[in-house]
Image (tube, rainbow, N blue to C red; front, side, top):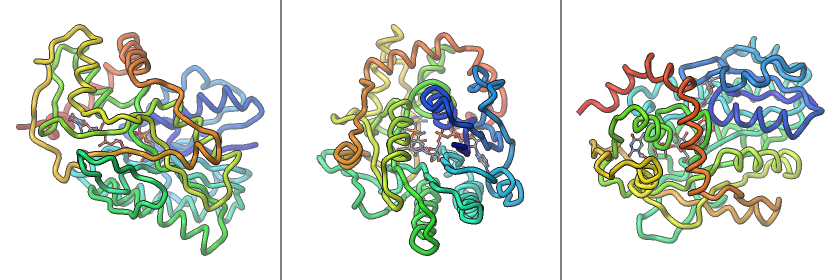
Length: 336
Ligand code: NAD
Ligand code: DAU
């Protein structure tokens, strides 16, 4: 089978390609990625010369390039997106372009090429926010209520994907997943930023009261969920994918990181809150468990430690990132 992965040079996309090359030794993998600030081919250096792997640099909003790349492809797994909420608050336009228009261009190309499956990788952020003290969780029936430009653009892309299923019969599936962590995460997201800041001797910026809750999932568990959906789910289906069963606040996540790295809690630095900050996310992943037998297999504390160790060992991966355009972003985002 020939599989086209968009955004394969990003955090989850590159983990997915490495996972797929290992677990599907018969398949040809095309990585289609524009190499924005978040794309990094070093993530894939271990397979770059593999005969079953090919990289195409292209933008998903460019229909000519997409149309060429998709010829002969049976399965599309669509990760490519602008993915960081804070950047969407600083500048929403590129989120609308990439996440909405880009998805529509890809859907048109997939339809014209007759792909057998179009899998769209989405997020729990489309559902909005849950109350802090509640036991509520998002599931496949939760109404959409996106509250950041990023979440709104992902919600719009989900709607387009479903529209192409109902209107044109494109065989689509969707996963809405919670916060991923693991190797190759760009150091702008909480866990990768916290670990790398500590390794640089810097403090960790904590938004607001730090009591916000996210549902953390090790990236390989996400890859396995998508694999199961591709092989077993019916077209038109959506699955919620998440990790934790107990709430953990951002402060407590950071405390675990500081403890493992032998640093004091005073390395946390309260900073101004994110506008429209979603209080709590929690995922009910019982549908994918019941129907496809998936459940997370990587325990949070153990794999958080492994992730810390990965960033300790891979300074050559993240130090160049943190010295470039990143500095401008960091100043704009964390200016008092
Ligand atoms: P990322 O920012 O690390 O990577 C995004 C990739 O997309 C980069 O390689 C970038 O170069 C590429 N890209 C961006 N614009 C493009 C364009 N116009 N054309 C082609 N390629 C382009 O993102 P990530 O964290 O790996 O997230 C991947 C996907 O998973 C996104 O769709 C995101 O919404 C979704 N998701 C992420 C998380 C998470 O916790 N990170 C959770 C749930 C869902
Ligand atoms: O829930 C899935 C989503 O998770 C994905 O769709 C997004 O692509 C991904 O970026 C992530 O979004 P979040 O906004 O939840 O992740 P982030 O790592 O940016 O923030 C996690 C929490 O930590 C959130 O409550 C904000 C807080 N935070 C974040 C940063 C970067 C801080 O307190 N300080 C920080 O410096």
